[in-house]
Image 1 (cartoon, rainbow, N blue to C red):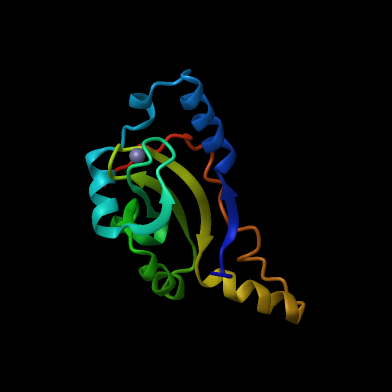
Image 2: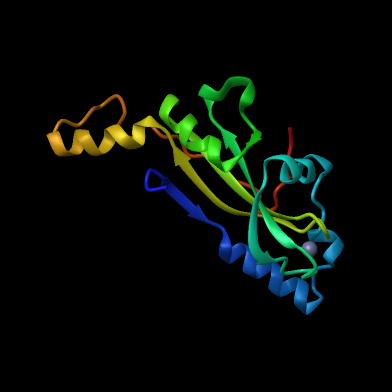
Length: 155
Ligand SMILES: [Zn+2]
């Protein structure tokens, strides 16, 4: 999706955790702790991948997309199918997507990516072209602050 903005990549953190797991510095039980919510989200809303679980190598990873944002109201924090995101991006100004990889076999889970979607992404380019900087939308995004590397999962 080329409308993604403010992409934050968590692959470095993930690699660090996996290195510690393979060194034996972290027990697999500590990282294979997907909550029942996260596991059912993976089952019902997850996006299957061809990538093997880096911990147990028994199953392929599933990507779960969680959405956050004021405009979502009660839907904030829910998992959505990947196919639903472009529809939401057409109707909402801005919302955040958190992508979590989950192994449904051993319960390994890690936040891998975060980005913003929404109509603001489309209008910003047009405003830039026209030279008119909209003070209302410029710099409107909020910092989401410090997120835990480990995904707690909810909803
Ligand atoms: Zn696994």
